[in-house]
Image 1 (cartoon, rainbow, N blue to C red):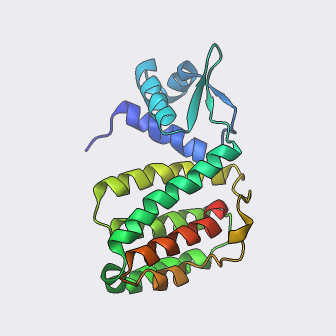
Image 2 (cartoon, rainbow, N blue to C red):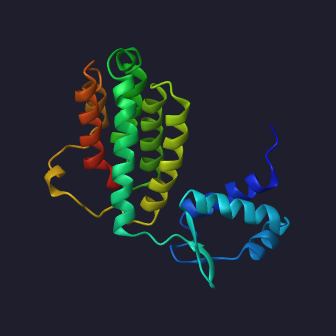
Amino acid sequence: MKRSLSQRVYDTLLERILRNEWAPGDMINRREVAAELEVSVAPALEAMLQLEAEGLLETIPRKGTRIRVITEEDLRGQVILRQALEGQAARLYCGEPIIQNEARLLELAAAVDSSAVNSWDNWEKEILFHRSLVELADCKVLVREFNKVMRLSLFFAANKLSSLSFNNQYDHIINRHTELVKKLQVSDADVAERAMRDHLYSGLLNL
């Protein structure tokens, strides 16, 4: 299906933001964006509104639109949001779905664990692994919301604020994805959810 002009502008701006070509606080002018990408102002504005709705841009009264400035509160909220979303997904897919897909999941997990932490390659493999888990829940809404949340996670990571630690009691938890696959094979939904929550606390801020 042919992508609309606004979606193509969105894709271009999203890539630039995630690739850290713009830093938090940089101002973005929709007319300049439109001129550079050779489109009218309307699709540029539509794309920017979509990015703002997803939390990547923010509008400052009487100043304009800028790349979102990341705060410690943002990072705390990201931890909580991912825990809620992926914890619920773990309750749905734990046990047999994990066992049936063990080989593929272990391959994806090993790829994450063997990549350099805080590298672009590591972030992308981390997202692919967790998306594959969420997809096992067989719930389109969860997958859609996961994709939105992970765009923000990637944005935060790209701006190197992911090294902040908010809860030292989780520092001892080893952030190994291959071990997580094994833990999620249990049929007890409470145990699976806790395993995912502990994993995210130990590793989310290294995305």
